[in-house]
Image 1 (cartoon, one colour):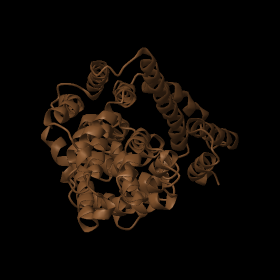
Image 2 (image 1 turned 60 degrees about the vertical axis):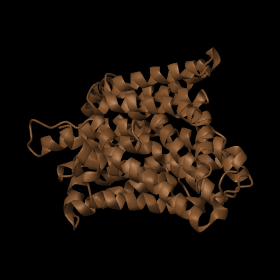
Image 3 (image 1 turned 30 degrees about the horizontal axis):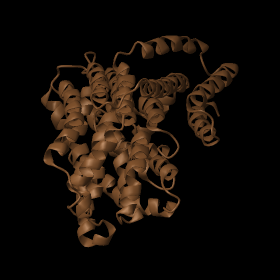
Length: 455
């Protein structure tokens, strides 16, 4: 029974989450409950819990994680100042005459918004409120409109600078050092958040290209599903388009360019992004003291949620390791036929299924620290593994019936749009996601080439 306790810890966490208990306190409470049982039965060393304060201090003192509140502030500032709304309106006018012009504009603006916010829920809700009524009014089929918005909203998982990649980069960096030490490498090579940002660029942009290609093919095969914008609605000068597109694009280039060129760390670049977004909102006269207060409160709430979950997950992984869970996983993977391929496939399936009930933050903090060192010790590239996990979670968030993106859109979609239409609409985009993952599995250089140039 005690030998199975690490496995039972996972089941208990999933059960409590399905009952609606808060994630952070579920993780910490489960860990303390199981540790108490282990101490009473003599199978858990209570001295291990003395390491927990050091873990909390290490989390608070982690320079890389300072980027989280700064990137959140950047995204919330652009969202609350209605700059994204203006951008979508102008982009829709510019693309209106093209087949599926409105849908393509949603993908492009969603990509920019994803690069600015990095939060799936915020992007899906924002795009749903801004674009879904307009797309339906212009004659788009509910399936195509909702599928496009859901798929575009999940781009925040893979388009840098993504909060998911910041958290994954920090966790994978620690996991990679552990793996190298296990392999007898006492001068471990680092992997940084910047490496993950560079690794995600090509797969992320290719995914955007696949989305746009699907919309074009759909519009050409079935013009009724994605009609062009009426001529009177797309009157927009080139100067107006450039004026609306240039500021957010320049901000993203400034943030990403400084990271990729090595001029700034992700944390420093996040600070530049937060200040840039604030100045942009001021220059557009979209920022008041009231909105500033809303932005600060929203940023504080999100940051507090992330770090509370991180502390709970840290206690959970400490107790999990105290029961020998990591050794149990290592032995289990070693006995699998097919070696590293089967182990990786199994982990990806588990992460995909967990994506139905856990957010990317919980999966990053709970699952990746446990399976990451084992997989990396088997020879996987940390950047490739990180991008595959991000794509996997992105696909999981789209998949009916439990995908988070579907729930977010259902919450803001008109009642005239049935839930079944949303489910049907995301199916082709799930296929494109799976295709992207297969391509990345066949050609790992899509993720590893750019980071390799910087080393």
